[in-house]
Amino acid sequence: MEFLKDRRTLLALVGGALALLAGVIIASVMVNKGKGEKPAPPPASQGGLVVETGAPDDGRLDPAKPLRCFVAGQYVGEMTLAECAKRNGVATGALDVGVDEAGNLAAADQAGTMLTPLPPQPEAVTPLNPAPTAPAQPPAATNAPAGGCWRYVDGGWRKLPNDLTLNACVQALFAGRCERPGGATYGRWMQQTLRLVPGKVEVSGDNRSFRPLAEQAQNCSISTIG
View 1: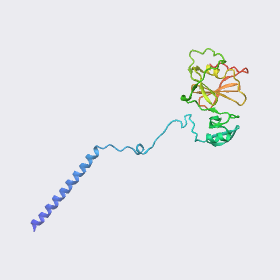
View 2 (view 1 turned 180 degrees about the vertical axis):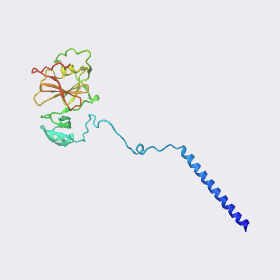
View 3 (view 1 turned 180 degrees about the horizontal axis):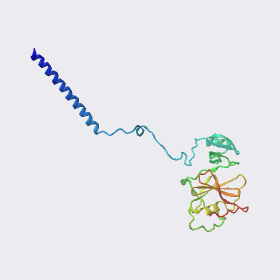
View 4 (view 1 turned 90 degrees about the vertical axis):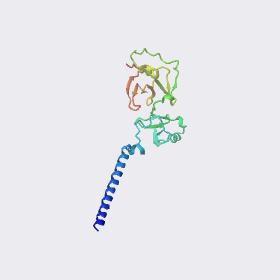
């Protein structure tokens, strides 16, 4: 009987030792397996967290996006460009589209609403030959920067053939032309919007807020800039 009791004790000890050894082997395998794996990327990099920067419009007009609509100079609500053209009784391409005095995107017929045209797109620029009757340009200072000069006419931007200084661009666009009360004529020099209103030329760096740039005399001449 003592022999059988000692044998059962021995078997129990051997079984416990085997179980402990198996646990150590399994734990060692799992640890070694985890060492070669790279950590999983964060959920934001897998599931579509996308951060976009920059201006949403960048000067492009979405035909389906509502804009402020004016009919005969009166605000009639927000609607698509096609609906606004229908309210004005004209084709879509006949509407002036730009920024109103409050800085909102707007569209209007040419009757009594002052809209600042959207900046020109580089690929849409059409060269404009200078008119034969254009006034002579005063000599430019050698240290004055020169850049692209655009005229806004017939609902689109036309680029003058040569780069000009700011003064030369203003003279080419507006000298000899007087604007009627309530009206405005637009141009661009490099990244700035130019606006001729009665008695002066204004400039804007953001296409919304204008400041005086040059005075205009009664004979429609523009004072030299710089």
